[in-house]
Image (tube, rainbow, N blue to C red; front, side):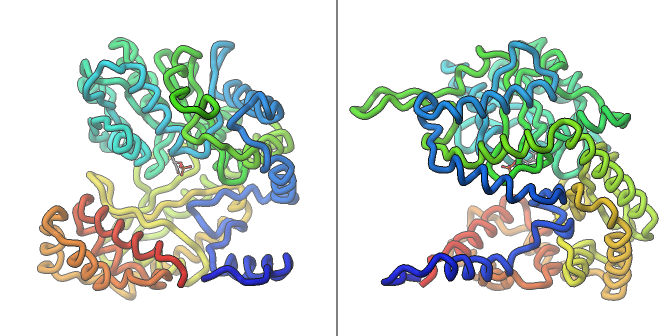
Length: 478
Ligand SMILES: Cc1ncc(COP(=O)(O)O)c(C=O)c1O
């Protein structure tokens, strides 16, 4: 694309944008069970858009120049701390999302030990990939500790893994893949006994679990009130139903947060003073989040939590009744991991069949003891329409059964499993992704075969293949 010589009228530009957006997965209505969070509240999008427009030109780079942003950030951090077991010592920052919050927790822990040549973090194998990204960016070693049969962190194995180079131990509440809560008190106590920080990744569960508990659900202790927990992340763009672009990283006190901050006076311009990874920071997402939080309020979040709790329970019970499906682990939040209980079909075919019926369920590859499965992020928008989802899921399983398992010959399977990514040239990768049909911007409608083949690849090979795929996707429009 080149820029139009004469600019287009605003309504035409918006028309084009609407046309582009029509090809996307629906973000409202509960049919997309990953990536998006729908409260189903009328007027919320408009409120958020209005608040965003009011503040998007303001720059969080200098909070003294834009005190409105400072005030909104301090308000949001106080609300998050109050919800998540904080006290008068708790401090925090609003970041751009869960990954930034997790990365900053790792950075703060690492930067607090400048003399350590090779700092290390200890994570459960179900920890979000954001921690591997942090380790990659900040040159930190990761000790990944396999989880128990129920997909929860193995507290004693994690305790044993803490050594003199360990700067942070990470647990999830809940984990993304299975929706289960790690034993936070045990891991945090072990970390504290060694003088090591403990981060609770409550990015996805943090804004909903306290309300589940208030509604009488059994929610084990996981927040800042647990002795030994030094930081906690909670995303506002998940179950606080705010627009994309906001998360909160809480620290138990200001001394723990200090190493997160960055200042540089080593140049002739303004002294750069940053609390997060960004420097110029739009006030838009912050203001939108502040508006949404104040509009929904405590009672509103309780009502939304009640809806999503009831929807998750109904869907879980319904899935258990579909012959051939099983739920992995004992999910205590809003996320379900659905695997095949029999070997006469592939769950990835079920995902395709659900796509045909207007749903998006997210394929998750087999990993350690976790079987290939489908991930469901349930939101308030699923409340009241659980039966529609379950009926389609039941039909999708029947269709997948009729199609039979995806056939990848043992030879192809073993060739894929034995490919060593470090031996392959970029051309060989190009040929492989072309073979898999992944050369177009539009992914093929039916993904089961590709997913089964990707699932047979080692994680390292899969990473390399998908990076090549990304490189194809991000080709400038010409
Ligand atoms: C537990 C957990 N941590 C971190 C993240 C990363 O959040 P984001 O996608 O906002 O960067 C997610 C996202 O789903 C998550 O579920």
